[in-house]
Length: 347
Image (cartoon, rainbow, N blue to C red):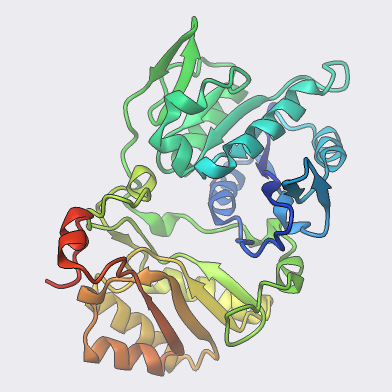
């Protein structure tokens, strides 16, 4: 029997009992990995539990878990019968939620279906895989970018080959944690494309936070580049994407934007890059393409943008292309604090 089914799960979120939960994000990481797997004949499902925000389970007098109920998660797993389950463990604050889902998986009786390979990943996992692997139910931790690593894991698992020495992974062998060498960063990120067809995009649009703090409804998160050369001490993104900046081509970005606007009726983009404007020629070319094609889109940069990568020409072009708001990551106005956190605000 082929072992070619992969399920990705974003766990429900535990938070304050009075929280309305306003942090729903598109599962872009899973969508990119799913795109790579599907290209290689794997069958993929994405279960984004926080999407079902109306489901709330009270844990104690201070805490509520928001998202799919335990029975929903178990039912989806049993229905799909995945060979591999990738569980998001991206944030330190939500590690216990990831562990809760992993425990649910392991509690499913083996008579119902054979236990899957459990893989975790994300910034928290990449930063401290040894700590995450104290959960003995985890088979593999992915360190850094996930696309090529999950493909190699899935391929070798399907072929019944050993998974002990894969680059970009960590695992427990004979009660000892082995952290394998890092995997090289993907040079051609144009080879990647998110699998939008695997999510019900209209459910995201219906979420009350989709239009919150945006100019238009039907807003989507996208990423046009990876990495940032800055060395801010507080930023964890280098654990996943490194400090070398890699930008998608304008052609690749436009392909995604036109898919979103024409097929899904998207009217606003939240560009979540860590350094959108680092390559001046690229951002100007992108803006010119949007203007030339008369793409009716508004966009902003909620993840912040480097002040030192902006000038009047770039800002003017961005405005003409639909950008209406830029967010600056300043952190502190104190030169001493800026030096301490290695924050560069000019070049």
